[in-house]
Each structure stands twice: as structure tokens, then as C-alpha cells.
Image (tube, rainbow, N blue to C red; front, side, top):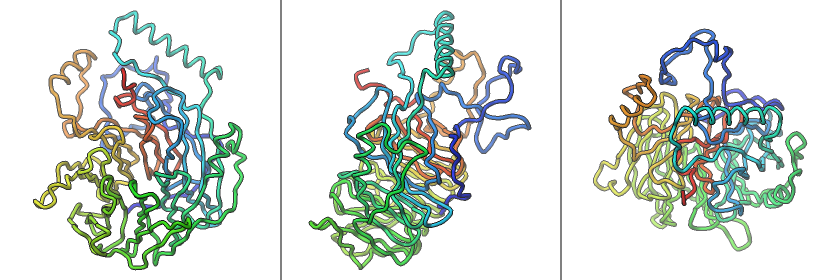
Length: 471
């Protein structure tokens, strides 16, 4: 049940990078055998610092909007359904965690000119000459960056005043300018932020970082729970249908009206013995949603069958912080626990008693976010309180022949730890107190994460969906 930002500090105007620079010159450093560094296992010696390897990413950028944000959402836009060419533009909504309740706001922002490198569909055959050319090209690129030829991403921001910290914020899939925000005051509010998005879309100078205005407006609808909460989700199938869950073990159903407001059923769904932590609508059944709780259970609900769960099962031995329902393989449900474990279940096997198909104990601290890839049915991303963002591919298996071939090519004894799961595809670090992540549904391979020290936009180079479909 790791929720809030540990130390709320307003970010300074200078962006913090997501990597630690080494203090020694690479040319003077002694040559030592390559080693796989294990986060949480290996310790840094005095004077040692980790350095980010840029070649591991097709794109990596860091930014902040002032106060840290516990939650955000990526907005569906009209710039193209499948975008593979740099530079990219992304629209966001986020809720702040400010020091004082009156200092909070909903941030609506656009990040444009997100640069990166386009991978070759077919890797080039490496020769001594090609290696030299590649090195010289990368040196030239770095020189261009140093000379200011390559411009970094541009951030445009508008803010809407919000009373209280925002625990979670979600954009409606069918109408992205409509969002629901969970406040620590116990209120869930629905907002129309269309005018702010239009202003950002129409100009490149509106709301540039440092001069963002704070606007006052009223929400479309407000509902007061008996306690604060974090769980909230819009239906992907029924426009405007919403569920919100609180720390008082209750879940409320919101139904839209023709007048542009919502009817909230005062009789909640009950069945959990502790706080409701997350909610997910089924991607295929308009009346079905799932919930997770501090009681360690996951429940499946059908709103046509009353206020009790249609099914409930023990999912973890600790709080179930987050869940994600696979949009491409609707029988698969992923969950992350306070004990750091990740579980994957096939809901078709629930009646047989054991629906667990995968279980990972890699993370040693609470899982704070989990989300299936919108482009690859077997891939999901996870963030943890251990300051790691991990990407998993459940279709991968250990291949000893491939490992031997890799060692022969590198001419180094690079031995992966025996207890490292073969399904672990990528580890991203550099952020402090990671809270939430999302894949970009229209830019394959892009993930955005938020933490106490700001946002990261990353596109790992080994995520194959970054390649054009005709590649």
C-alpha cells in the first residue's frame, strides 16, 4: 500500500537527467571484465557511480512540471494511430502532490520534438570499418548536440486549480478531454479540459515552461466518498461509465446522463475486507470489472448481478496494489503486490481453482504500477518502490545456445545471474520513488513514468515494436 510521495519538493527549473555521470575519464579507466550489474544485489564501491548507456534506448528524456505527480495519463490524440517516425509529440494530464492543498493543480501539457534514433530493420554486419564509421557518426551527433544544433523536447503547460492532492487521474478513452481525478479530500471530480488542450494544440508558444498560468474552473461533476481513495477506471466500451473505489472498502458506479452529468449509485459494491486499491474494466464485457484490495484478494464483478462479487480469489500474500487487464488477450489479468511479487492469471481457469500462469519475485519492494503493452499481448511494464522500471515479455524462454553465441561475439565472459528471469527484457533506472507508468497507445515502444523527481519518456532499443510494421 505504498502510495504517497515520500518527500514533496518542488522541482527546480533545471531538469534532472535520468542518469548518473561517471567522475573518471573512460580513457584512463582500467579495463575490467564486463559484468551484469544487479540492482538491489550489487553495491557500489566508494567513488563509483552508475552511468546510463545511451545505446540501450531509442529515446530517453526527462522533464518535470513543478510539484511531483503521483498519477498521470497519456491522452489519445489525432496525430496518427501508429507513429514510428521521430520527432514525436505527446499530450498528458497529471495531478500534483503539492505541499499545501491550495497549491495543487491538474496539469495539461504537451511535450513536442521528442527526438530519438530510428533502428535499422536489419542489423548491419559489423566490421572494423563499420565500427569506426558508427563511432564517428555518434561523435558527430554528440558534437551537434553540444553546439545546440539538435534541440531538446519542448514542454507547454497549462494548469487548472485543484483543492487537495490528486491521488489518481484518468482520461476518458472515448473523449480524452474529459478526466476523472481522485483527491485526498475524499472527492472524485470529473473535469472538461478541452479548452486547454485546444489552446496547446493551436500554438507552439502557449504555456511554455516557466510561465504557465493557473486557471480556475468548476468540475462537471463531484462525488464525495466516505474516505479518500486511489482506485478509478473509465469503461473502454461504454462512454462515460466510471467506477471509483475508496479506502472504506467501497466501490461506486457512475453512469452518464444526457445532461452531461453523472448518476452515482449511492449503494456501493461491497465484498472486500480492506481498502480497494485498483479497478479495471473488462476490455470485452461492458458490465464486468475487476478490483484489487489490501485484503490480498482480486474480485470480479458484474454490475447486472447485484452488489457482491461474481468471483473472488486470493491473489497475493500482501496488499494487491495494482492490476491490469490485457486488452489484446482479454483472459489475462496481471497484478502487483506490496511484497514486490507480480502474478499473471488466466481468468478462463478460475472455475478450475488455479488460474495462476506466471509468478515473479524479482522486485523486493512494493509494486506501484503495472500495465500490459497495447501492442504486444505478451509484454507488460512494471514500476516498483525499488526505483526500477522493468519490462517483461512472457513469451521469452532461456536459450543457452543463444547465450553462448552472444558470448562468442562479444569475446567477453558476460554471465547473466542465474536467478534472473528470462522473461525480464529491460531494466530502467534513474528515477526516485517511482509511482506510475503508461505505454503510449499510438507510439509503439514508448513508455512514460512519473516519480518524485519528475517524468521520464523512454523507448528501449530492444522493444521490437519500435520498428515500422513494414520493416
